[in-house]
Length: 234
Ligand SMILES: *Cc1c(COP(=O)(O)O)cnc(C)c1O
Image (cartoon, rainbow, N blue to C red; front, side):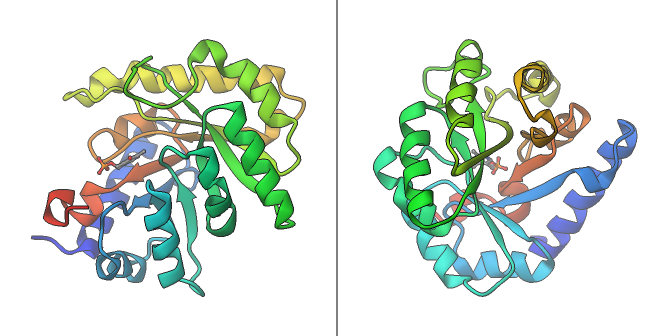
């Protein structure tokens, strides 16, 4: 089995190749290491290998891991479904929330961050495949949600995030990545400060190269970096 450092080197070279293929600056794509269910020791190995952004799905697990890495220069992105009554935990410990998908959550997160005298960068999660099993605002509801979220002083909307349908062949996912990019373009037409809307969080272990070709600025990679989650069940 390869080490996390070897996995990271392999992912970085594939990221760079995808940038070159599509005429993009490799500096414009950042890797989020997804640590759900990954034990702290393994996460530490990743941090020592050079990962600087970590993504967590479960808020209690996130709070524990973030505590374990306090004092280190890591940016923590929350990437899971967030219940409104857990917004205070996110406000306490997360640097970004990528999964704002409804006004009630945005409102509570805003209240909690302002209470702590801070603001927080957020992404709006879009359900590009209109799947009932997935969180995210529908493409049709995006503009209305964006307008609501943009009013909250504690939330800095930076762009969009999606978890597209799982399809074996990454090429088949491409239209969903294209859709997210198009939706961001449409929002920029409406936004008072389009220059702040720069992020597209899309692409995971099996499809990040296609996502980069379609404009991803944040890719979220778990398995390809830390190994199969089956090895360390939740
Ligand atoms: C688990 C997860 C990932 C990473 O998935 P891998 O296939 O292991 O790379 C990315 N984003 C979200 C939202 C996830 O839940």
